[in-house]
Length: 434
Image (cartoon, rainbow, N blue to C red; front, side, top):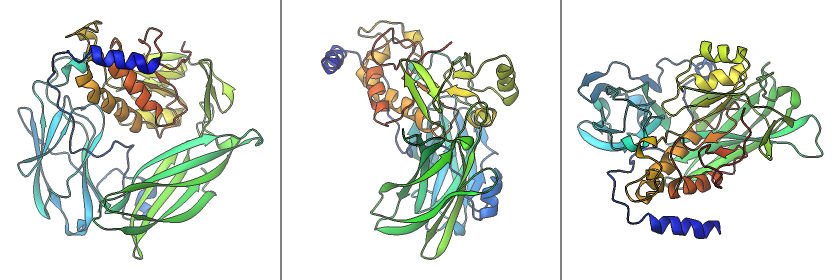
């Protein structure tokens, strides 16, 4: 019955007038923040300043809606990848290298990365970010006012040809295991080589006192421009599980080796906790919890989060828009639950599903909905404080939100995907919020 309904909705929307929407191109797949360091000491310190593999981009020159900066690709980056990271922009934008347009991002609200290896030359280069005026995606961003063109934090990152692209975790408890949980850590490894390449990936998972919980290494061979996931399991005692009362995080240390040389070091703070829902009631580490929710702007700072916690709130439901770079880490360490919000708010288009109505039922906008919900998921999924994901807000309903919900379910995540404005339709998991 559900599939029939989707088909009916799809055909009913085919007569909609075409919209001016250009899909993103030239972007890397979305991921949580990954920073590579040349030594284990620098990785352990997690410094945010420049190092041999990281160059902050801060001195931009703005002219109108364009932002320009010169950067240098050093000889030490030969046979490595050159990745450009941009936290956010005030609208959709193009990326240009040495005068050539190489990428376009239709979602400027969340961090994005672009592989510049084929376009940047050794030595001096010019990078330009051109923010769209007017925005091509304004219909999806009703919360915005007439903002001046702006961009957020940016840096260049060098990673090996075969490198760790992302990290994710899953935690569960077997019925016959008491006071211990099983954690899976996945290391997503990608190769940009044009021929098969083999590297070794080492990992250590340490408790807060520095004791080893899991240690080992795995070899991986990838064909041309392929990726795969290395997985390892660890047994986590209840005393080390993350919870609001005891927001414990463990330290994952990763290093890669190719032909006897260590190529990069990375450290990831990870929290492990089990999560289930039963008829809309959330249980964390097997204990039912009441979610006392405050809807907040996504640029909240640590003092504001602490104040809300002191007032008795334990859950932040973010409004749409760019998220503060420190918000998720702050909530991880403070023990505050978070529900990220995909940047979709189409209230200015009204609630009609007819031709020219809300883009949620216009199939030509489907790619934008899929992209934005996936961006929100992948950039926040690693954080233990994130306990659910909101697909949209005040955006009517229709084929694009149905398909977005089904697409998110493919990730196999136990966390709920909610759309509070679904008005009882099936594309929202039940979750009790106070």
